[in-house]
Length: 140
Image 1 (cartoon, one colour):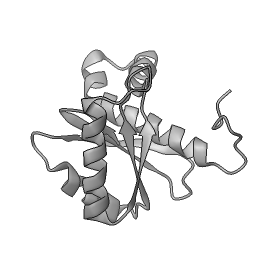
Image 2 (cartoon, rainbow, N blue to C red):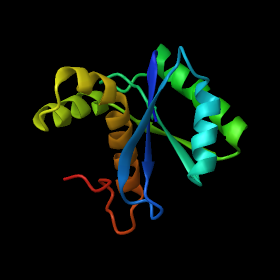
Image 3 (cartoon, rainbow, N blue to C red):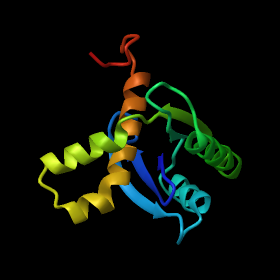
């Protein structure tokens, strides 16, 4: 998940936990994020929820990180699932770059950015957990 103030991007992985794909965006003003994620987790047999942790470039946590941690606690309590936090630095910038390179028009990028960022966060998390991946988490 890519938790934002207004929207929360959601991605899912395949059953083997190797490929992440953008899934949906939850509008916080229209939906209960915890209830929506609980429903998605149940329908798709989710085993672990990964929540992006917004930290500054220096690694410091601010109000957004505190909000993401509170959301993670609520999700863990509501679903009974393991909730992992994962550094989300650069995920939104990377999502924007990927969509721009793919030729997506600005209006479509705005509506898809959060779920693409969630897929990037999940993909990085999955690479770090892959068997045979070194200490660098699969990055060169």
